[in-house]
Each structure stands twice: as structure tokens, then as C-alpha cells.
Figure 1 (spheres, one colour):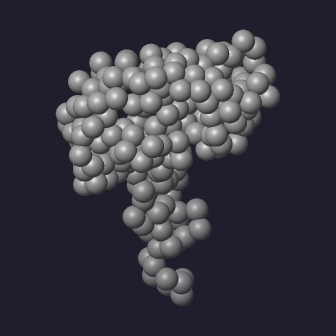
Figure 2: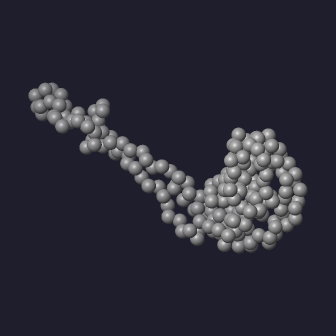
Figure 3: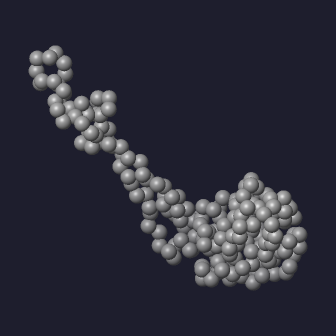
Length: 205
């Protein structure tokens, strides 16, 4: 299949041949949902932790004798009902990762890219030239292409490209190695360089 290829100034540079197996597959909502859920689950730190009564320091001595004081029985000052005591059902670190086969993950990425192409939300440009780290210059290039909520994907994020785009709202820049389901679905449009498309095809074939 072929997709439109643009160059700076919103001018069409022709057509780019892309792999049907990467940019022309059917939309699989269930697979995309599973991949996105697994990705978000793997992003959770799961590091919350509390101390149970056995882990709280102190409380080795019985506060007072068992009988005759008129007070309730107490065996330790680190009981969960005491201030400074342990937590009854203490939270412990948890690994939230979900297993997802590599084949399924890549299939979800292919389905997302294909749907972006069908909805004309995938824009391919020959190259992105950023001579100096100027936000104004980068903003001008995006406005020429009619883009204001966009993810830019390049084979390599140069310092000038990063610095010129980091202060623009709703614009992010990643390289092809950072592509994931969450970031692809988080923007209205995805702008990929021709080299990034070729590298992505090689990864997903």
C-alpha cells in the first residue's frame, strides 16, 4: 500500500510504499486493549509498603500486668489499635506486570498504526530539519502541516529537536525505540519521518 509523503511547508512529495502487514492490518480492539492494559500495569511502581505489628520497633515488654489494673488487657504497645502500632493488613510491594507475548505486543502496535493510517491521523514527512533549538521555528513547521496535538517519531531525537519542541503544549518527541501503545493513542496525530517508518517496518515485520 501507499501513503502520502509530505515535506516541509505541507507540500506533497509523492507517495511512500509501506508494508501492508504493518500499516494495513485489521483493527483488533481486544488485542489493543490487552496490550494497553499490560503496558499500564507494568508502569505501576507497586512499591507501597507498611509495617505489620511484628515489624514495628519496640513493644517487647507487656505494658502492664494482666489483671488488677482496671484497664483492658494489653500485651504490646505495638498492637494495631495503639497509636504507633503496626497496620492490621499491611500493604506490601507488589509486582503488577502482566505477561504479554512479543508477537501479541507487536500485533497491537501494527493494529494501532494501521488504524491511524485509515483515519488519516498518521502523517509521514521526508525529514524534520531543526537547525537551532528554537521553539518558534519548530512551531512554525508544525503549523505549516496543520498540526497542534501531535506525537513526533524520528529515528533519533537530536538535541535541537528535543529542545525546540519541549515547551510546546500537546507535542512530544520520541525515537522509534520508545514506541508503545499508550503514547501512540495519546495524541490526535502522529508525525513520522520517512526513516522512522522504514525502521518501524523492519521491527514489526
